[in-house]
Image (cartoon, rainbow, N blue to C red):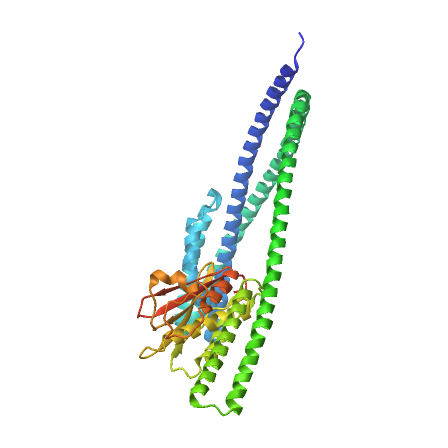
Length: 467
């Protein structure tokens, strides 16, 4: 009867399975034996260490008392007192250790002799302290006999344990040899399975065409996706080109403002100042000229702020680690001027990573605003603080000024938007510049206030590894 390919594979699988189970059972049994042998070896090693510690403890007590009896130098007693601190632990371990039947009685004797050795040591110390030298020497000699007995017992037990360890090691070696045989047999088994697997592969190859067609279809889908991705990249390039053109337009706009607006303003300012200095002008016309001069200053300031606003979100940001506390203290000295406002920085401000020039402008705008709007308070006060969170560092500027309606907080950061009347000078650009700079750093800015009770402006900068 002809056996089919499936039948051959099935027979091979059954034979390999039975052989593998048998080998696994043998390996499992070997592993248990080896594990137990390892545990016995470790227990024996621990008992040897305990016997060595016991003998060392007795030697320390013996040498300590002999030195003290001869010299009466208390320094010899340091090892003795150290030994007293651990003798209880050693005795407890001697009593609780799982000794073999052959050495169990010896361990009990060692414990009793250790107690006797300690008692004799105490008596010798007492006699020597009371100048009874002969009695002390006698106790030391008795203690030596006890110590010798302990040495003999510990040495005998140690020899027994070392012999037992050798037997265990020999047993382990035999089992390792058995495991090598098991591994070799396992390799043969897996080779057999590999042969059977190759037979199975002959049947699997029949499905190759089907899988190949599926792969071709997948490749076509990938090609289509790549085409779509190329279109997206092309669109992104066009967007970047448009953005670049807008930046160039902005640069041209900035130049136009600087040249076409500021140049006539400078000329008007110079001519007005010259007229006031050189011409004989009556008081009424003099006031008119001074008003023109003030207007030119305001317009020039407005142009500068417009330029700052235009560049704040478009120029490349050059970040570096900033000592924010030092920067703020320096700015406070600059903006305080003749103001009577008290500016407090109760704690050192957290350092951060940002563009120094841009962040400096943020602080100048926030501090000058706080000073300006708290000037009418009975005791104008501004406070600067910072706090660190997992993802950001928050800085805040608080004042006790006029405040504003909280519902209009978003209007504060719009360009040319002012929430207060002309009593307070300003162009309505300062806070818009603040927002533009902070957002360009990946941060956020806002304020909290109640009308007539002051305000707190805060901004957050993302944390980085160097801040």
